[in-house]
Amino acid sequence: MAILNFTPSSMFPVTIDSARGTRVRGSVIKMQKSLNTTDPHPPASPGFSLCTCGRKHFLGEATTPFLPISPIYAAPSTAPSTAQNSTEVLNQLRPPKPDWYFELYGYFRSAGMERYEKEIAVYKRKLFANLVGKAETVLEIGIGAGPNIKYYNNIPNVSVLGVDPNPKMESHARKSAIEAGVKSENFKFIHAVAESMPLEDASVDAVVGSLVMCSVTDIPQTLKEIKRILKPGGLYLFVEHVAAEADGTFLRMVQNVLDPLQQVVADGCHLTRNTEDYLLEAGFKGGVDINKVSLSAFYHLSPHLYGVAYN
Image (spheres, rainbow, N blue to C red):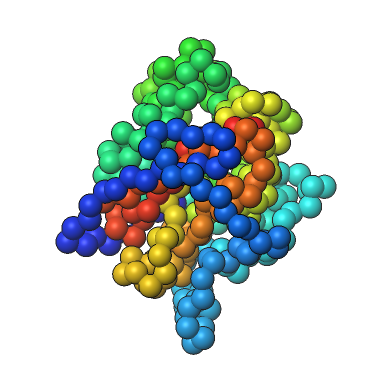
C-alpha cells in the first residue's frame, strides 16, 4: 500500500479497545455485533456508494492509459477456484505489470513510509511481543520492504516467510532481514497473493499482516487462507487502516472522495473498508482481540486497528 499525503491542521490521537467473546484485555468496551447472514461487503467493492455520476468508473477509464494498474473494484468478486495453483491465482488477481512499475512501487514502499513507521512503532512493539516464546516460523503476508522484520529479532531461531505479489520487493525485504540480524537461510520470499499461498495446511506458527487487507481482492478468502496455514493455536497479528466509523464526518467524506484515486495510484488500496467486521466474521476459534487507535501521520489513514486473532 502506498500513501497519498493529506494532513489537517491538527489531529489528536485517541485509543479505544474492543473485544469479542470472552477475551478481554486492557481498557475494553465489550462489543457484540449483529451481523447479516449475507456478506454485506463484496470483496471487490469499496463498501460505500459515491454519487450516481459514475466517478469511480471515470477515474478507472481516465487513468488506465497512463498507469499499468486497474482499480481493484474492477476485479472479479468471486473467490478463485481451489483447483487453481497459486501462480494462476496470482496472475488472475494481479496481472503482470511492467518491471518499472514494480521497481517504482518498491522504492516508495521502502523509502516513503518512515513517518508512518515511526508513529506506529509503539503499537507494533506491543503487538509483536505476543510472538516471543510462541512462534518460530512466521509468515508475513504483504511483506513489502520488510519494515516489520526488525520486530522478530527477539524470537530465537526465527524463520521468516514473506509473501508479496510484487517480485521486486524481495531485494528490499532481504535487506531488511539482514539489517535485523535474520540469517539469510532463515528468510524466504514467496511471490504470491494472500488469497492463495503455496504452503501446506497448519504449517506456520504465526501470520503477520500490516496494511494488507486494504488492498487484497478478496478479504474473506485471505482470512480463510490464514486460518488454513496456521497451526492449531497459532496467532494472526494484524495492523490495518480502516474506514472512519461515523458516516457524515469530515474524515469519512475525505476518504470517500479519495478512495477511487487511492485504488488507482496505490496498487489497489481502499480507504473505506470495514476490516473489523471481516475479522469478527472469520470464525477464529480462539477469538479476536481488536484495538483501535487514531494516528496523526496521515489524516486519511488515521483510523487503525491492531490486534491478534487466535486460530
